[in-house]
Image (cartoon, rainbow, N blue to C red; front, side, top):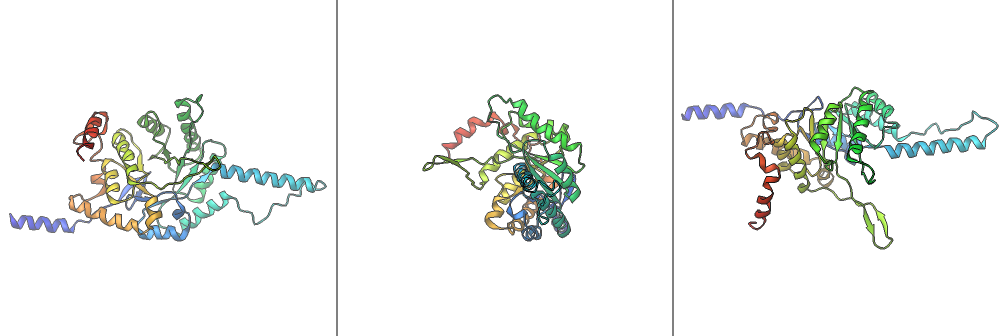
Length: 347
């Protein structure tokens, strides 16, 4: 028996831990993917992220408002110049060195694709279909491996129904899918009345993945000026629990990639997301706070956890604590509510 145990231990020691995962049809070396942030927007920091172990990265978002504002400014400039030189209708002196935000974004994709060995995922942030079809085609032609649609939309109009909001997302996705071939993932809010049903509708409309959940930044009020002012606060690990719960509920009920995003800071957060069924976990706030090297720490600790729990791969652990596989699946739903309340007095 002792000899058999020793032999099993030797076999175990010879097994390499496989951290690879599949996301949007892309084979990734591990599930650690930096999401949109200043770190993913510059080549130097992008290289640092790759060197630290990032398996892919999401570029900073290209904003619909920025492109529209830039286009209006350019049209106004051209119009003013035309009025100033009415004797020459064709004289429209647009500066030759002028580069639009879209031009810079496309250049960044090409630059990153040439310098990095990991997939580069573009990100579009907007609420309408105007202009996104052509933009999506240009992002694909520039070499983006996939496209994340971040539909950052607050339904503040009481006359807009939940169905209207859903249709906005679905229409944007459908229009883009008709014109591009790279995989598209939708970054969603948690504020849909039925998150699972919305994910299923997006899958049926052609989405290859969803990212759960978007963080809506809350505006503040300046009490001296009584003006609304922007307020940015980085995430905390507590926010990850909402994501973990919903991923556990939908894993196995839909057939598309799932990214966990918002509140993933340490290795425990990442492990929990993978156990409930996430294919990847996005990292953002923690990297801004501690630097790209934190990816190496999480990667090493994830390998150690798998070894200690006798799992050979991320694929083996992934989804093992989703609702369909959990020992106590009811704990993910309302039936656990009273237990949570009672547990407070026991702390």
